[in-house]
Image (cartoon, rainbow, N blue to C red; front, top):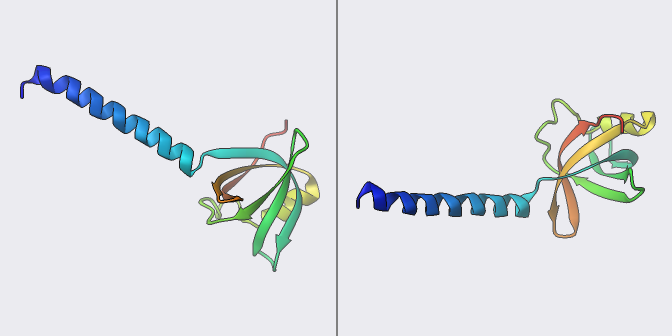
Length: 111
């Protein structure tokens, strides 16, 4: 195959790959919420199961703690401190069935 014929084929394959990656990213995760922690369900220090966030628009959403990718920077028990000080949190989550599963937590800027 000559390079002139190969170029359109490579462009088509690249385009399909980009679309596939975008679709899989949307299906797997990439969602975020920001708000105030209003409830933490734990069985002991550092064993938080779920927490509830009140977003700026007033809606309350509960998240199950999954495997946190940044637990060294934001230990899960830090959520209790955020609840006590009313400091905002940013949660990155994936929807798994009817649950929102947190995979990253961060301090959120004041809004």
